[in-house]
Length: 201
Image 1 (cartoon, one colour):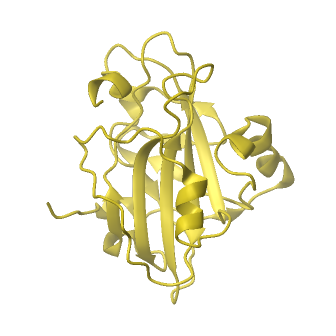
Image 2 (spheres, helix red, strand yellow):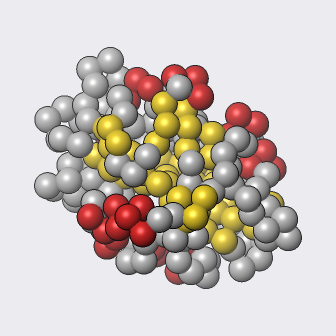
């Protein structure tokens, strides 16, 4: 199955994060639950169809994040980047035995042109199980050391084999270093959207 990526992703710029923005990653325990070093720049992430914007832990409804968001940045035109979206709270933050649940994984992004990227894991929006509280949905951008031949199995948007992903292990495997930009939102169960962790596993 050929992977693809919508041009609607190419809309947003990464801005320098203020100190309080960086602190949000530690206060929310994304550092160290997902990464040990918080990103130094803030990604602006927008769900255009529902007019919702991600901002450092704000709460969004699963029904508003079904379609892939716009995520763009001012990248080095001669470099390649990787974008990760992950949920470390699977099936719940109190009992994250399936952490991390990988929602989206895009590699070999040339500069900031996401339309020419390699989709490793197709986007799936938030779908927390009932009675599991708020989940954190984390976007992280990495600058690659060069173009990479990824060994990951391509996962379609109906493939539920996404549990126990490790952003840090993935970054180490391909020499990505620390994330250069990031953002995150939170979401809880919405009875209008199926619980993905149970639906796709």
